[in-house]
Length: 268
Image (tube, rainbow, N blue to C red; front, side, top):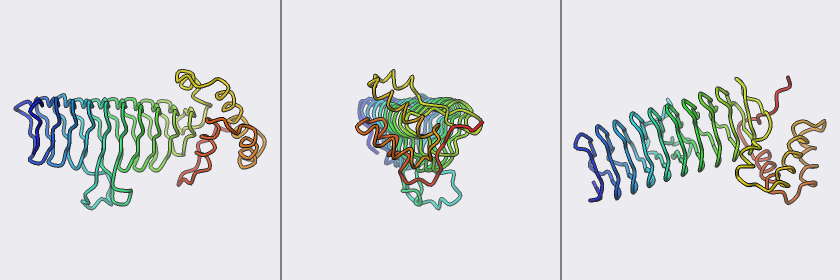
C-alpha cells in the first residue's frame, strides 16, 4: 500500500493493502478502496464510494456517494480474468454511477476519458471506450463495447445498445433507445432513436468555421435526404466537399467497419 502523506483519509474508510493513493487525495467516510486501485492526485471520494478491481482514477476526479466503480462486468461470459478500468482526469462521477472493467473477449479494458460529467445513476458497461468532455445525464446507460467519441451529450434515461458507435459531437435526446451507430455531429431523438439532423448548436458553440458547417449541412442532406443511394451520394459529396474536415470526418465514420447499422432519419 502506498499512501501519499498529503492524502486525507477518513478513519471509517477501508484502504486495502496494495492500493495507491496520490497526493492531496481526499477520501471521505465509509469508502472502500481495493488492493489494485490507483487514485491520482487530488481525487475526491465524497463518502460511501466503492472503488474495486484493477482500476485507475485520474487526477482531480470527484466521485460522489454510493457510486460503484470497478466491480466485475455484468456479463455472464466473464470468467474472473484480470481486466481493467481506466478513468481519466477531472471527471465528475455522481451518485449511484456504475462503471465496469473490460472482458477478455472485448480487449480487457474499459476506458473513460477526461473532463466528463456522469450524472446520477449512469452506467458505463464493460469494454466501452468513452472520449473526453462527454456528458451522460441521469440514468443514461451504455451497453458493453460501445465507442463514444469526444464531446458527446447523452440525455437522461437514454440507452445505447452494445457495440454501437456514437460519433464526435453527437447529441442523443432523453429516453432515446439507440440501436445503431450515430454519425459525428448527429442529433437523434425518439423511443427508437432516429436521426433528426445535426447538432448545429454544439458546432456553433465550439466556434467551428461557418463555411465548414454549411458544407456539412449540405453533405448531410445529400446523403440522408436526397434521391441518390447512400453509396452514390457519398461519392458525390467526397468530390464536392474535399478539404472540408467535418465532411471528411462524417464520411470516414460512415465508411468504417462496424457491427451495427447506421441511425438514419425516420421515414415517417
